[in-house]
Length: 193
Image 1: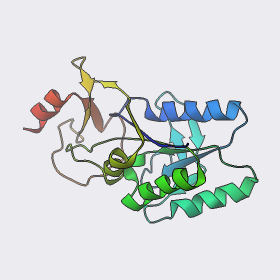
Image 2: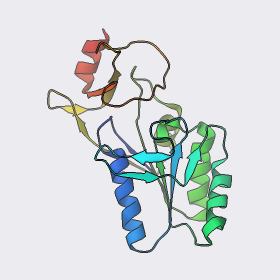
Image 3: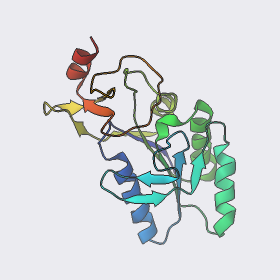
Image 4: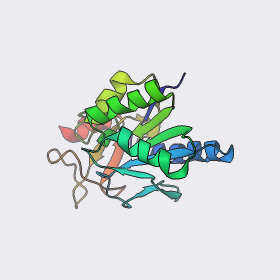
């Protein structure tokens, strides 16, 4: 039976790298995967970018209001080959409805769905997609990142142009190592107080 998986971690935990490795493993066995990326993540446009330098074009660039099942149906009819696995990058940007639709894909179509994303934003608040993936996934796995102190990093802090922690602002602001730093909870709290 197929399942809905959520692989989560802080920035620099290797989420996209792990996802691209899974895609490679399926394709090495001549199995078709569909790679989905949220259009909210404008970094690289339709490219899934690993910090190790590996990139790949997403099959579906999913907007927040888009029906995920319809997008997959379109992918399924394009090649004539059945879909063996669905992989979702930046899953924190999914809506509640899209997470529900992913559950439908695995429950009704018997296709495994593996999602990868952050749990929380720079304030420690859950993203909508992550909240429902944590609640509804059949399998959860944390991918680990390391804080500067050597402890496991579970939080992410946003920095301004001067390198100071940002305490307010929009939940979504796309950036890399220049804007975000992964921290353990202790150092995250110390910077926010």
